[in-house]
Image 1 (cartoon, helix red, strand yellow):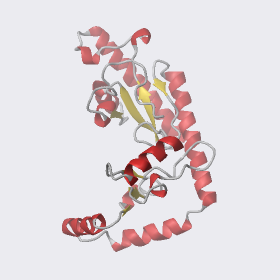
Image 2: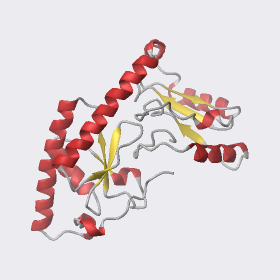
Image 3: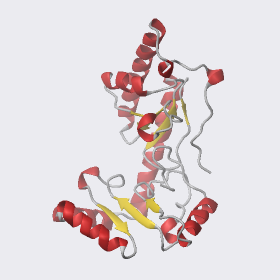
Image 4: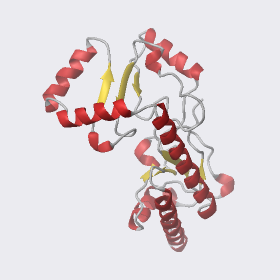
Length: 247
């Protein structure tokens, strides 16, 4: 996901894209580019070209679920033969075809998407991103978040070895979050959580209020009882450096 990486929201540099495109051209690896969040760049300036524009050997996949509406459940794939035929055969064996109604609605909505709508949509998302980041600074100053350049969520570092237990506490307070363990198998990101900023501003404010209450409950519980190392609170001096930054 070079544009709008999930969960970090980073955007890959042009030099890195050229290097990966060269790998695809050389046939050294099959490169699959996920463009699901590529239209949701939040910083000023046009989004960078996709990898598929740099190499015909890159397999590109995309979806309208993040740009338009998840209920459509419509995506697409661009691949050369013989992979294209193999994918079509596998798709037909699974569920024959995507519903005609969903495809029709998707085609009509995509036809209505223009530069003006995209600019307004990105601007609204950037406002919500900045609003959520500001709320965290005010109500949860021990948390750290690097504002993403694209996408729909903040990747937030907590002063914990593991955020899994806190995710359960947050759910009991009415806020669903994704712990870093869902996006990582080597434990380098287990002290992170992913927070969506796609909601309205007042909903984000309520969510942060509940997260602050959940955090107070969680830290009090940790202080009151012996906790395994994976649940201990890390001091500001010993917090690990950010390992996910993309160059």
